Every structure is written in C-alpha cells, then in structure tokens.
Length: 491
Image (cartoon, rainbow, N blue to C red):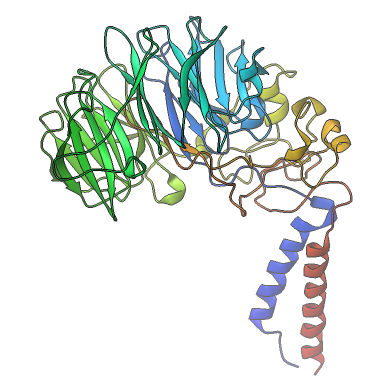
C-alpha cells in the first residue's frame, strides 16, 4: 500500500484553504491593495509631523507623534484622496479634495461631510494652500473637457472661479514665490503661469537654441523658492531625461543636463542655491549653482518621490515599500544625501481610538486593516452601517441595484475613477495619468457583511445571492484529489 504523493498533499492543503476563503460562508472583498503614498501634507500645529495621502487607502496622519489611519471611506466611499489642507490652532478643521468632491471635517478627521458648494460633488485633482498667503486652490478634473480653477480666501468656506480654462491632463501645480502670489499649472497640453491678483495668465513654452520641446514631453517642473523666474523642466528623451533651466520665467531656456533616467523628481533647496534630481531607479544628480550645472552622485534609495520642503530646512519624500522602496515616508536633514524613515510601513499605523462611535472614521474604517495586513486587532465579520454609503451613486456598484446600495449592503471597492496622482517637487504634484481609465484588474476591498474584517486579500463578491461557482469548483477539485489519494492507497 503506497503512501500519497507529497505533491498531492500540498495541493490538497492549498485548495482546502482557498475554498474556505471563497466559500459562501466567508465572502470578502479585499481592502485597497498594495497602497502607495502619492502626496505629503505638512502640519503647522505640530512641527515635524507630515501626513501621507495614498492612492487607495486614504490618509495616514501623524497625530501626536503616532501615525493613525483614516481610511478612504471615512471621507467618501471609494474615494481617492487628492489633497489635504488643515486649519485651526489644533488643526481641527480638515479639507480633503477627492475624486468625489471636496469634504470637510470639523473634529480633526473623525467625521466628514461634503462642502455646501458645487465642489462637494465635483471630481478634483488636488488642493493647494499657500504657505504665507491665505490663498487656497483646487481644480476640477473631469476627463476630456476643459477644467476650472477655484480660489478661496477664507480657508475654503467660499469659492470663486478664476478666469482660466484648463486644457489637457493635469501634471503639476507649483506656487510662485513673489510679493504678488501666483502659481504655475502644468498639463500635458499647456503650462500656465497665473497671477492671483491680476487673475491673468500666460502660457510658457519650453525650448532652447538647440531643442524645441513639445509640451506633452515636459514631464516635471520645479520652481526655485528664492526666485519666481527660475524654473527647472524635465523633458522626456527616450529612456532618459533632459533638464532645462530658465531664469526669466520661461522666456528662454538652457539645456543643462542629460540624465540616465526619465522618471526623475526635482527639488530646489530652501534657499534656492542647491537642486537635486532623484531617479526612480536610485540615480541621483545634484546642482550647487541653482540648477546651472549638474553632477552625478552615488545611487540612493529607489522609488523616492513626493519631494517636499519641510518647515525647518529638512525635506521629505515618499517611497513604496511594495516596490522595493525603503519606507513609506522618509526625511532628510542634509538635502537628500541621506534619508531616515518617518513611516516605515503602512502596517505600523493604528486605528484612531479618539474618534466617537458615530463618526465616519470609526464606523466606516472599523474592521479594516491598513496596508496589506491580514489581521490588525480589529473585529471580524463587521457589517458597515448604511451611513457609510448613503448618497453613493449606483454606478459605483455595477453588480448591484440601487436599493442594495442605499441599504448599505455593498461591496467595498477601490475607486474606479482613474489612476492615482503622484505629488512631487516644491509642494506641487504630478499626475500618474489622473484622468486615465481604471485598471481592469484593480484589487477591490472589503464589503458590508464581509467575513475577515476586510483584511483578507481575496477578490470574491460579497453581495447577496452572489455566484459562488469559483468556490464550488475548488471544493470539487479538492474532493477529486481526496478520492484520487484514497484510490492510490487502495491500489
């Protein structure tokens, strides 16, 4: 009598475990899969604190020295957090721009509601607060149509529309350091230089004596904080990147460097005397004369983006631990020469325990896990209340009826409204195809009535009456293996 083949035993074990997770008794949607920080927001109330906005898991906020998690559904179901502005002595008033509107919290991020303005239901590309001025900017992000720029002078309570029609897919926003504040708005169709007081704008063209660069090939911009006329531009050059510099606000440009990487982040130092270029593959280049000449340095950490100047001479960056990056958020005190982690992993964060039970952050994040955690001390078999999904358009639930959506019996799914934004350079932000079509294999997330607390990385519908054919097939295969194994022992 022969013993079963060890390979059959292993396969039987794997199929049995899989069948448990996809069986009708344990239907789950995974939460946002493999998150990545795409923007950083500095705290003014707590020096040194920096908050990370992610592509599919909301906000990781440094509150009282500890990173706390505000999942995306706390703001709005399935929303991508595109921008964050904090107001108040204790930063108790939050404004969050998403691809499902502008939302406000009056209690430090525990409960959220849409603002009483058309922006409350508008797809937005970001939110930018001026460091010294009282200006706050947001921009609509509807694909395929000209978009509008909105300006607030009272911390986002009222808004006016600027006289600018924005063409193309958004790529970056950069404040200009000047007595009369203005900004540069970068899309794949135009580069706009806009004045806040004059409300006028000009279009910048990037070209040198040797090279005229089509605007769609201009990938990144960076503005010197010491001189509003000094700009760096990164232009696509095959699999390399070409750096160009202007010292007259874009009137003329000089070709200053050819880099061996095309995916490069740019940043001027606080005094504008230095500049760095950080490649996604670890390449590093540095300028000691405000961007005029460049020299390579030893390779540094990979996939470092979101380069942002801090308030005390330091700089911050984001990386992606899920793509060989060293940390989620990092800090450098020597302008990018060395880095130290601020947030190592998303799984190091904890849920907010200071929020009331009737707030969205408690109700809608309960039972979920940050990062790719399978368990995080949260209750399992959580049914999220209808309040988490009230008013959600039925098109977000392609496999369900309106009645199911309104009842809260819904699948928690990643936003289907396009790819994430990648924020970069001098407090600006650059797009990773903000208006692109959604990924067909985007991992969905945990749902109402789900077993496993929304932390199991399994993609199976949890809607009532779902087709469980996958689980059935796997269990049948497992049964066949058992029969085959026993048959082998008999014969």
